Length: 108
Image (tube, rainbow, N blue to C red; front, side, top):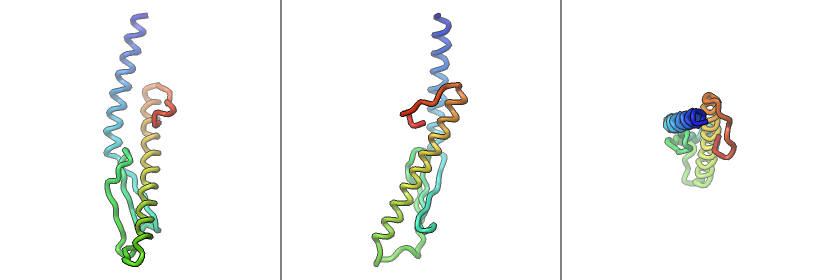
């Protein structure tokens, strides 16, 4: 029984190390989303942090600031959804690679 516990603890430690490594990798992975037919582009990392915003000068108008604000918010939301999907996929693959089940409610 002690041998089983020792083996299980090694497996848990390996999973923790792999999870930490994957979290670091996700910080370096990026997704891009756009709105307004590509007029506003947002890049986010795997932690759903916005790392870049590009705005086409054609969409910048003092007469319609509200539209630009809406386009930015829409692109950010889409980038966060894509980053979340990427993160879930990556974490799921890592858990499967370790022979562990996916854990609902843990973000993957």
